[in-house]
Length: 138
Image (cartoon, rainbow, N blue to C red; front, side, top):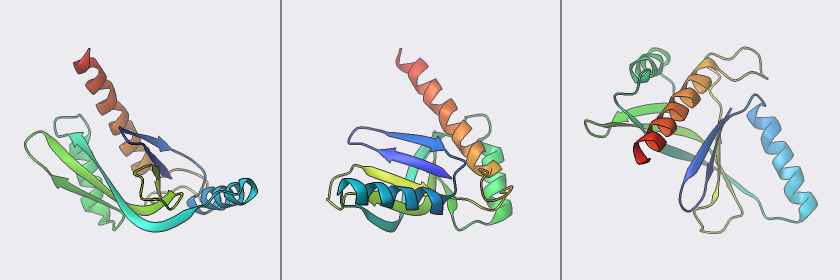
């Protein structure tokens, strides 16, 4: 499962081994116990990866090979490729930009408690892009 946590200024991507259903159920229980409003709705999330990042071509091949409805890639310009994921948006129901997006790709999954190779590969690409961006800004 991939979890994207959005704030007003950035987002963080995590790869979790827990199933989407288990994670949502625990989140609902937590919201009930603390008296917090929780809104869960189908949605999409997008982020950019540098086109010249090693592994982007492999990701394109994986996405094309599995013809997944969960992930799509689109070239933005000569420098970036947009990764779009289908999943669920969890928030407190307000119109704020803060919330959590979750998705699961079961195409290459090894049992229901393991992250798929595609999820983990995408996570590693995102980490590499973040490291490159932080080096460039220094």
